[in-house]
Structures are given as C-alpha cells and as structure tokens.
Image (cartoon, rainbow, N blue to C red; front, side):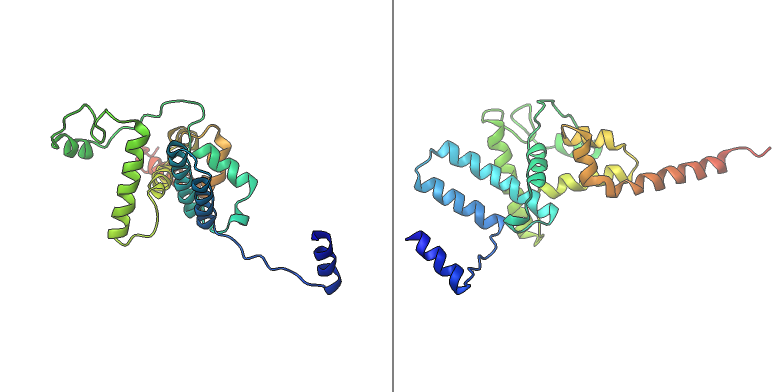
Length: 205
C-alpha cells in the first residue's frame, strides 16, 4: 500500500510540505511521548532540566527551529551545559555583594542552599526563580544570558580568552573561541590604551 501511494505521488508530482518545528515544540512533544511511555519521574525530571538548558542555549545563540540546530551546534551545547572534566570552578564574589550577603541571616554554611537537598534540586529552583523574575520585570531572555554577559564583560576588560574558557568550564579553548572570538577586539583596544597610557607616564629624554 505504501509503495502504491509513493508511486502515486511520483506520478502526480505531488509534494508534501512539512512545517518547520521549533526547538520548544520538539522538546514538548518528546516529553509528552515520554509521559505516554510512562517513564519514571526521575527520568522525566532529567529531561526537563536538559531541555531547559537547551532552550536557554538556543535563545542565546538565536536558534529557534530544530532543523537549524546542526550537529556541530549540538556538540557545542553538550560541552557547555556540563563540566565534562569534573573540574570544580571557583569564582570570587565581589566584596560589595559579599557584604550584603553577610547581612542576611542564614541557618547553614551556604547562602543559597540549605545543604540538605541535592545540588541539582537547588539549581532547578534558582532557574525557576530567575524565570519568574524575568517575567515580572518584562525581560525577554533566560538566566543563561547572565553567563554570556559574564564572559563578554571579562573579555572586554582584558581578561584572557584562556581564563574565560576555564571560568566557563569549557573542556577546550576552541569552544570558547567559537562563541566569543568576536568580543576579543575589546581586549586589543584595552591593550592599545595601556600602551598609550605608558607613553604618557614615561619620562621624556
């Protein structure tokens, strides 16, 4: 029957237009199918978290349609959403922010975690909190954009691409270069200004 239908399409010159699917729609359909297959809640929770990060990555990269998400893009996403090397990344808190945090009463050694639940749970809670805050402030975007702003600001202030790559948890420098090489001119401008400043400070002979 299928062969007959295929031959009919060839003879009649008919074409079937397939509407492009958005990444969000594809994720929703996958989850709906997973629920229909009665996957365990633990597995569904992992998929929800993965798709939340996928949507955030797509928003930052400006990718809306599933067919525009290439294999290379998928590999890059896979390398950025998880620190595959298992290396702990430590980032200092600005003194002003730390002073404000120390004024908040806390019942555990952590500022944003009770220490009782799994770390993944608190990450999910904070991502939901950011989403709600963005919605109330009428800000279009996702908390993942804060990570992007962090990287760009460091580069424009002259931080080396290698250091930014380590702070982002990228497993190799090529990933950082692919996404942030466009912002390195700011580093060159900063170096040129440093040289000009040195000219002014140098004594005349």
